[in-house]
Length: 368
Image 1: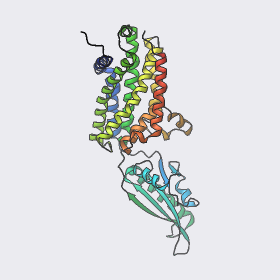
Image 2 (image 1 turned 180 degrees about the vertical axis):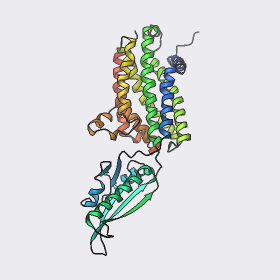
Image 3 (image 1 turned 90 degrees about the vertical axis):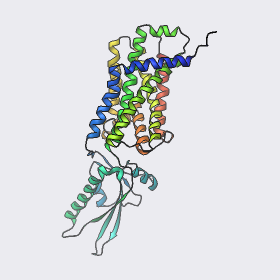
Image 4 (image 1 turned 120 degrees about the vertical axis):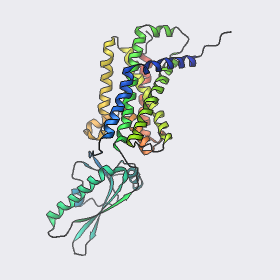
């Protein structure tokens, strides 16, 4: 008596064939693994000297109505962050979201003139910007001294207090971005070209005549890309961890959560690839359309430099793109130790994109 047909076993067979096909494809290996590895080596070898923006938390007791405060925050690179309570501000400091916490208090000097005491709380998580911030503050005070006082008097004294935090390296920013880049390229391009060729060669039409359900066909492709990405992520994370001190805050469990969160990105970008393959009628048009979708995300989603470097009007658009939600989530998991369920913005954003792309894919997907 013949065994009953198993959709799941058929799905695994498709996954195995698709994985072998991707591993044998020079284009898939180069764009999904080799290019990200090259970027990791290049950026990981660079000296961490990016000053860009210096975010400082403003203590609730800080006196902001004085010339000392205005002088410190006047440079464009210094960005005051207010509205957080003491606990959230301290947590942001330890996780490297802000460079320091600033508190300015007025004090009466024994010489008879008023002055200010600057209290600066820093952490090792922002060591690359602390020295620059201290220099800005000292130069600001020195400039006020030249304008206001003569002799050895000073407008403010500076007290720096350092607390323990996780050391932040440039690789902690770059590597999650390269994982996102790898997922983007592997899922969109390989899915678009694969399904277009299968449809043009009437392979999908033959598969359609078999008992396999469409869901299991897509599941097989998802499984194959999951294994392919696991290989790539293991290579990238191992290189970053052992060669450039990439932070896995909770070790192996952090790596597992990064993989789980990456699945959402794979579903979104595979769906985009399926949609392209279904709508495009000419093979020569697949690459231009795929590039039109991928290139803006590569440039706008903070893979190589922070989104905060863009104009404010453009930042809003950047934060809505699916690759932004994916990369931001991976950075929070790896460096900050945030669990998937503790990222409502990133999780909601990538989930909404997953639902949207899934609906579009189901409506436009064609077997022939």
